[in-house]
Length: 186
Image (cartoon, rainbow, N blue to C red):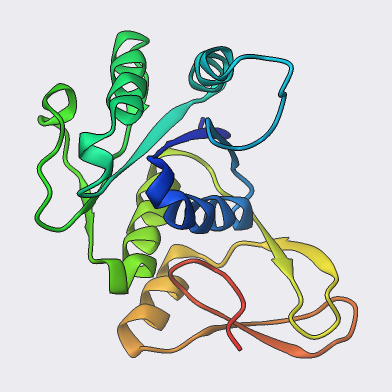
């Protein structure tokens, strides 16, 4: 079962990593990243090793900058050596690093990153049991937990180009969710 995910990325891809972390948070998956400013008492190398060892899955974000990053390649090497599950998110046109070239990637275009996040969540849903969503109401700001929509309902919304609907437990207003990332839409 996947409960913790390590996000490997270069410094230039921090916005992509943060968006991924938010999408994972929505489906109640914890994420680690070496560039987060946590546990400063530990060295960066210790934070990386700890994050990878404690994770059930590694998601490297491979962009033009990321594929050249020594840190990203070292994190991938450590994950391969630890026999971790690796699901690469790869920018269109970028070749995977040699150690993970045999893996099927989830390709993305920067302008359609949410589509790739949707595919990632869909794949993770097939690998592990995802039952709950965390939603922050865009109107009252309260956080709530709700059952995740069944896969069939999500697929129907995606095919129809519609949003998923829910109601805030606090302010009782309708909330529309992006069926790819389950995040509230304005």
